[in-house]
Length: 438
Image (cartoon, rainbow, N blue to C red):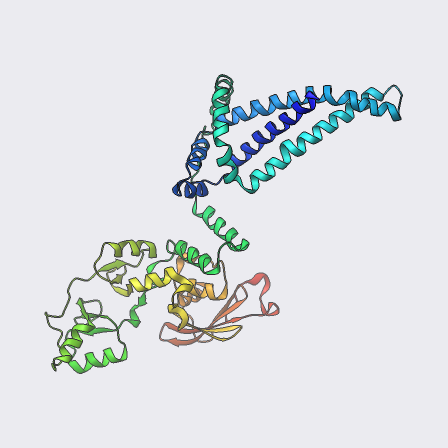
């Protein structure tokens, strides 16, 4: 009877060590840090153990092997004789004792596999952090008790690892790809709402999208000339009301400053005609290069007093303006009104009218396209068409890519004003989905 009790104790100990091994190894560092910030001190102990796991794993292997050996010895003593008696009741031949031994071996092995290995490891994989925090104190105490043996085996292991040229400790550098994979998994499982999923995706887009994908382009900028009369200025404000207007001297690339619309309103309320004089003209402009990413631009605005910036290219020519609101709209995604809602107009379920200056990433979001070829070569839908055609398009020129037809329908000079994007039936696609040109 004492042997059976000892076997149960060994199974419980083996289950504890097996569960601890899996739980500590599978615990997510990010989740543990969150628990630690919430005041869970045991989460910090688990993190410390993960940083230097050598002694812990040495102790686990010593314990599991010792328990397995003891379990085999006690199992043979406790079960073989009893099972052999049952075998003799149905078979009295010369193989009775061997059969009894094999059956007792299979029985004790099955019990250990089920209750000391599979079941505890499954539990540890399901809730690794919770299990790890419960057992970390016990595991540290056992590791300390086994210090001489642990130090020996751990030392030998470290020597072998160094000989193999491997790092002695685990490197937990979380990459952007891993975070994206976790977010995708959360969205698939339903733990992340659609808005949260898109918001996190937009955060990563800030690192890849450049200013031209979010700015107001040069041809859309409303500005004043320093010599404009009052009627011209008020007409522009009434047609395109904005908070700030650039002021130039003859050409947009010769900026002299900017003026706030409220300063113009004050002049009008006093009954005066509008004058772009030194009193209302702000000469300190904030410039950003067009090569900056949206993330870099946000960081630049943190150290600037202006709420908008003039975007220039490498030749110091003005290519657009960008505001903090533009950047925040790009970041907020579905939680804020999209600037491309007026640039992408759905004609029906399978076709869209698209402004040529629409950022290609915005169109890809609408069409649910994940990949586009060589995205660093262009920023807009018009740029995508030109890049694929390898020439300036003419009206009715088109390409087919990923099941969509991109057709230029409005050309002004060399500028692609508008495209028609339509879904193409598979029977109309060229072989291997190659682009089609007019």
